[in-house]
Length: 324
Ligand code: PBG
Image (cartoon, rainbow, N blue to C red; front, side):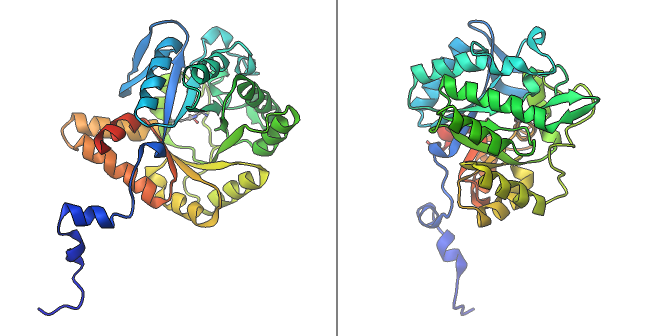
């Protein structure tokens, strides 16, 4: 054969492949979700997330120091609220002495340069396990947004670098931005979960925080996974309202959405490789059906290739080690 173009020339050795690789993962791509619990010296493995833990604050600080030493720049905090503090207003969420607020302060003291992001939604604090306030069986929008503003301000006060609203109520980004401006927190960023789908892939996370909805599902606020254009509408509105970073969630089943959004926005795009995505890889690896290390790198590279500038992932430490 006489060919004009031989594509395999660029694939013939590891050195050439490295030279022409279009997507390269690095430690600063990752945001590490951390689950924090009350108590001391406690570390509990999450049943449906083998190898991932919920820790008391003292052990969380050790973990954050280790993450920083590995080159990871950001953590995203979630806390487990005691049942007796849960109610329908979610008021524990803006308790100045609450676990989230204490955790933010302690982490910023221990590792000041670590970028601390906080989950903003009522579900861990809600006696109904919903992201908002419930009235007559409905999750009410505007009352919930008021609560989210209080929650965001209290996180900013504690020293959070970014608040990350994950609730999908209408108008919350604009209201949170206004709230932060009015209280003088002009350096606090907003990473909006702007296209968050009602997904079965959040199952293991709800085990981690004991936050599964007590009735119904989250389909009246989280998006329908059949929709694509709507993700752009949601994201563009969040940017207009003041989001600094937008997020698509989950990641692997939504690579088309990540690319659609990357093509039309001028802010950094993040994606969340969620708990169910982690659990799937772990389960298949345990059965010997997939090579865990290769699956981690391939999925994360695909998410970045699709257009994610940042990836929240439970595999961050593994990935950094593997990239070595
Ligand atoms: C809370 C929240 C959820 C996740 C992040 N923030 C659960 C949900 O919306 O039900 C899921 C994260 C994961 O599955 O890893 N609003």
